[in-house]
Image (cartoon, rainbow, N blue to C red; front, side, top):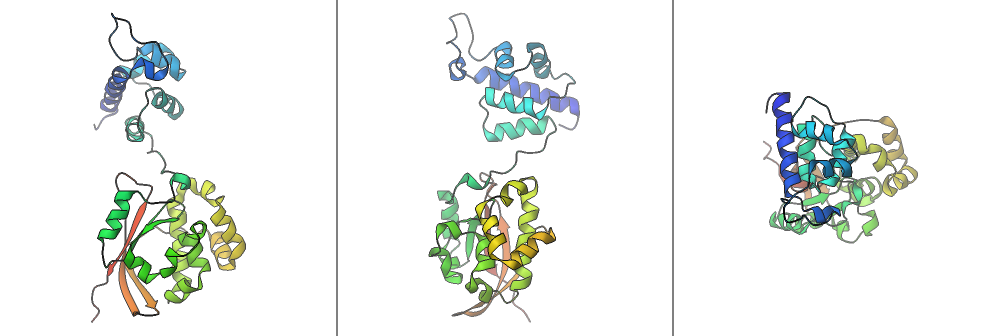
Length: 267
């Protein structure tokens, strides 16, 4: 779909298909009579969404009109669209994707994500939510950083631990650089959600608990994530070199899976 007309046509076809597939009873309407086919009428969708029937008809016909994001959100609610369908509809209308789920999406990684972490035996790996709460980890990560399993769940946040846990400061020989880079990456990922995330308890507590964090927060440094070599001074294993990678599950883009793999051998 390279042209605006093609995208409008695809949007109209999508809306017609979803309207036809929706049971009127689902949206609080009486069951269809014996002479009525299933699905909603255009007039019903328009009324439930707060738009005129003529305007909605034009939208289904692919006419050259530009619906607002608020109207499309209303249509998504009326048609009971899934988050994937909602995002698809927005993309056809030329809008940016839906923002990632907020920090209250869950404190525990989904089962299949945890199984992925466990399958990475020997490679330290963990999962973080949008506010960088650590929601899952494997045994290798617990060996690298034992406190992850014992810290209070309310403090199991990567930013909080990096800036407040003495073990992490000793574990990272480049702590001054790494801690600030983590915060710069957090800001870059937060994007339009930064205002909401800045009001979360962990950020507010960090602003009061760590002068280093407070200064770094005021720097407004932004840096995108890149895979790179990381160095650790483990109290038992000694010097460890890893490559730092990060992936996002397609069905949970709000989560990031962080994986440490052995770094290439140095000369």
